[in-house]
Figure (tube, rainbow, N blue to C red):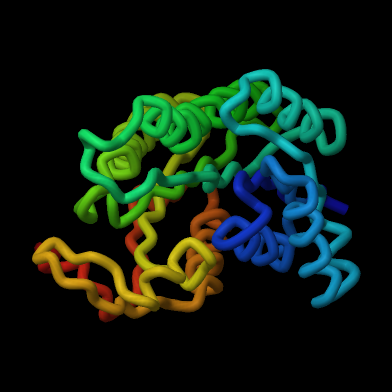
Length: 255
């Protein structure tokens, strides 16, 4: 019987990460759940168990700090020793800073966002490349969680916007460098998925014209299904960039 594909999802304890981990498990993947909080990762396992015990059995929590090189190395070592390979990495973990003018933003707040949103993706991708190049059969897929902010910023979002623009460049570089090793890399840019992080949009969020407007949101499962669609492609095909968003969110024509 062939081995099921092995996936790693960062930020798997809530929101998009949890929904995607569950969707990948439904699609037959063994999923390593990476995140800082062991209790949140266990919550993802319990969400799977509530759906089906067999689903929970495919969810494997591995508490991980994506900003710590040793912690990320340990995560991939778990994948290597338990399953022998990694087929899919979903770089999803991310954070933002308080929505304040840049002159009121501390250097520590800036660095905290860069560490999670950019350096964390680098550290995980670095380990994924090391495994995917050498495993048999070789190759795999990296999917980066970009954002609508990879294209157009919101007011007072300099750290988040800068890192998401950087993710687009990193995605392109990984896609190019992965060609010789059967490693595909793509990016999904998400707008207003209904998670804890976007609850403020349902209450009203600042627009470029100074108004505060309630923005539509979409079911997070649509995002998870889109990631699964990318993950299930053969390595001879790649979704380089995908944008998925609530249809009526003010993105096209923003500002």
